[in-house]
Image (tube, rainbow, N blue to C red; front, side):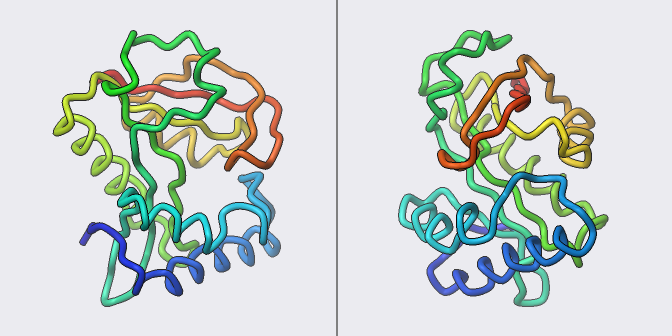
Length: 173
């Protein structure tokens, strides 16, 4: 089940982030996320406050989460997007996270499809996101779901972690 996150979910969401960090320490990293820097419990709390964090729940446990809103990071201003849109006609996926022990079950796909439906229901013309070019599983997922890579540039992930060769993707709705 996908639903809007509440403050009661904070500990389980943070646990999902921590499981991600442990997994990357043991098996190698696809992301540039840094424990204690981004994503953190504070990032989740801020998104809950703004009503933009959604969770995928399985048996009273958080299996994944996604932050979706209409706030485009400053780096998006320099990208030549496929679809010309006003800020109100675009939704953005900021953070998609699936608990490593729950991968391969279609959770990430379900969360992204949920974001697509939200964008359509909000009369948006496009859904945008960014990810590292080294994040092969994420890039593969987004392409499978119809996103197109429109640019590569530098970005501050989570507005804090500098990353070169970042990919900017868009799905025209």
